[in-house]
Amino acid sequence: MAEPMLELVSIDVRYGAVPAVRGLSFRVAEGEIVGLIGPNGAGKSTTLHAITGLVPTHAGHIRVEGKSIVGRAPEQIAQSGVALVPEGRRIYADFTVEENLRLGLAARRGRGQLAEAYELFPMLQEFRRRSAGALSGGQQQQLAIARALVAKPRLLLLDEPSLGLAPTLVAEVFKTLARIREQGVTVLLVEQRAQRTVALADRTYVLANGELRTTLGPADAADTDKLVAAYLSG
Ligand SMILES: Nc1ncnc2c1ncn2[C@@H]1O[C@H](COP(=O)(O)OP(=O)(O)O)[C@@H](O)[C@H]1O
Ligand SMILES: [Mg+2]
Image (tube, rainbow, N blue to C red):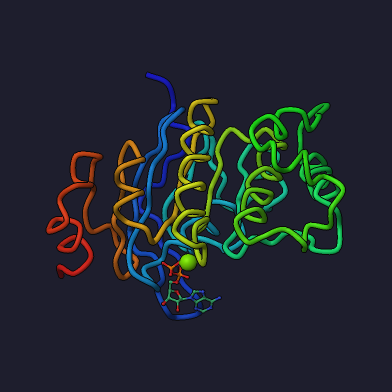
C-alpha cells in the first residue's frame, strides 16, 4: 500500500508546561480532503503548526509520504510540498494581487507560472493590478489560497478559511475547496463550520482539549444531534 500523504502518530505539543495536543494520531491519504473541527482552544491550529514545523512536538511522529519531518525547519517542510494558509489571510495589503501571487511562486520547486491560479480564480486575474488590500475579505481569502496553490503543494493545510466571512462568501470558499480537491491536491481543512466541513470532507476528526474525540463521515452532516454531541460530549 502507498504511504499516506500525512501521518501523525501519537503527537504531543506543549506550550511551556501547558499541553495543547495530546496523543493525537490520524492519517490523510493522497487526494483526500480531511476535516479537523472542534471548539476554540481544542488544538486545531497547534496541530497545523506542528505539521509545518512552526512549533516543536514533544512526542510522537509526523510523516509526510512516509518521511519523518519532526525537527525539520519550516522551509524544509515547505520544500517537501506542504503549504499552510494561515488563519487571518495574511496577504500583503500594499502589494498588488499579482505581486502576492509571485511571492507564492518563490516557494515553488522548479519553474512556475500564474495561469493555473487565474484559471481557478478568474477574479484574481481581473484584479491582478489592484493592491491586495483593496479586495474584499472573501477575495483576500481566495488570494491567500491561490498564493499557497501556486507553489504546487502536495498537501495544503488551511486554518479556518471561512472565518469572519459572510454566509455567501463562506459558500464560495467551500466551492473553491471542492475544486481544489478535483485537481488532486490533498487537503487538511481546519474549520469552525462543522456541518459544511463534515459534508465536504472524506472524513472529519473532532478535537477537544487537544485530543481526538471522534471521527465523522459525510453521512453525519445531516445529523445535527450527532454533530452537537460530538462537540459537547466528555
Ligand atoms: N503561542 C501560544 N502560547 C501558549 N499557549 C498557546 C499558544 N497557542 C495556543 N495556545 C494554547 O493551546 C491550546 C490550543 O490552542 P489552538 O491550537 O490555537 O486551538 P484552536 O486552533 O483549536 O482554537 C489553547 O489552550 C491555547 O490557549
Ligand atoms: Mg485556531
